[in-house]
Image 1 (cartoon, helix red, strand yellow):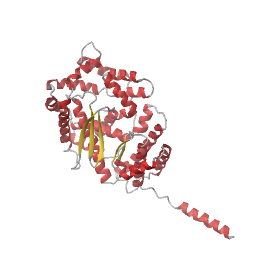
Image 2 (cartoon, rainbow, N blue to C red):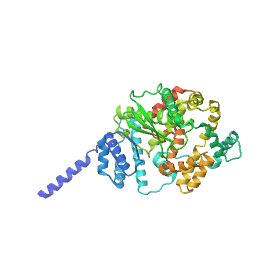
Image 3 (cartoon, rainbow, N blue to C red):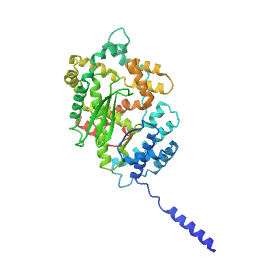
Image 4 (tube, rainbow, N blue to C red):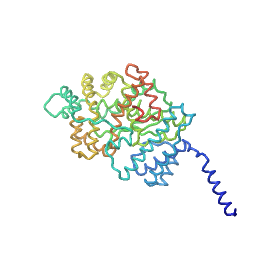
Length: 433
């Protein structure tokens, strides 16, 4: 055998030996770090994408320096999905470790969908919500809301259009601007007092409240890490008395602030899972976040307790007539059942089946939104698109999940237990069914 032949044989044998070596799986923490950096990279193309980030500042600086193009982000995400290792025998008994893999895979798939949308891909409302939020909302025609509207007709008699009668009725329940801060402070204090006996929160958790204008949303929680949040309340439109508890619970206790603080404590600090230092808004995580924030209102104020607290505490604080509280609560309970009408308006509007004027009219007719509020809602559709399903469908899925595990209204301690367990986990929307 010639020298050249011997070298060739040796090379082939060496290559075969390398090929025979088992491929070492990429560590999950490495995948998690790469995921965070990809989310930051998408955020440079989409200003609304990164809702919160409190990881290493140098990662953000690196993303800004590299400015990866969308095509490269998508290809890298695809490789990262393929690199997610199977659950090891040692981890099989750790439910959160198992959930972590599914979570990262689905979050990365949603990231790829958002990237394709930024590149011009058009999806239907339902295709988009399934790809981004791991869920599809049921379809409800106008007839679905007929019975609720007839009941409202009986409660609000008159000759004017029902939405006008409802709007006129609500004018009695606007929180005066000079009392807004004190009403919200009182609502926040009560929500916190009801949450703390059931949730072990870090001692230094806190948030601040700001009142802002010119926003497409009514309230927002900006989580800043180290167990702190900035909560903003939009004062563009009148704020009604029921919104005090809604926002205090949803944005604060036991809603977004608690959700983010528990993820930071149990998953980031206790387990070192850096993927939870970032929150991509257009992802399955949002259905869990919004669904728990809305369902948390019922958990904190079961049965008639909310109506009683509003009547006895918040109405006097706002300078409103407490004797009208029960009538307002009855009307609002009916209007809340119309929430899915907003999904239908968004679905038709974003699928090109209606224009802004028609979507506004639908919201006025079926969701009891004044023309001004309805038009503002269509601006929300423009920005956040199918995100709207996360509020009502999210709440329903969370409620279904908690109750299926014994957390029914008659077992409040169990309901809190299952609710808090969900808050501190990486469970996906499809895992709620």
